[in-house]
Image 1 (spheres, rainbow, N blue to C red):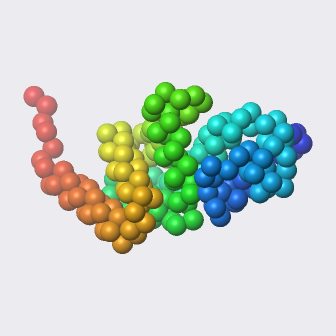
Image 2 (cartoon, rainbow, N blue to C red; image 1 turned 120 degrees about the vertical axis):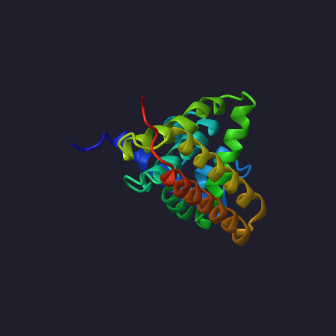
Length: 193
């Protein structure tokens, strides 16, 4: 079934916006400047996305969706899942989107609308996605910890551009997870009495 033309146009615009932001970030560009960068009018952006803030959230949502889609299927071992996720999200071409994510996240944490709306899903959507991909076998605490560490590392990366240092920190965390897994596997199973 084909999508209605309006949804097709919105999808096309969203893809073009993502490409444009990947090249130069959003910065403080006006809606008119953003529209010009993708060959449309600010009115069309308002029609399809509502406002500059809604446009930014739509881009963040789409990037998050794309990142979730590359999560390894059934990677129930936290260390393997963390290593795979870090390999994807640390790519330099994603830096403008990570900056945009943190900008929206910080504004939402201050209660600013429409950004505050993204906060519950910023964690819950990842928990739900990992749960679905692992058939419910992943420990939600490890998933949340991995997400928090990943976001902390990404914040460090976008602030410093120290790829080597941040990659080393990510690898250290993966090794900590591996040691924790090994230790947990060597413990005797508890007996019920």
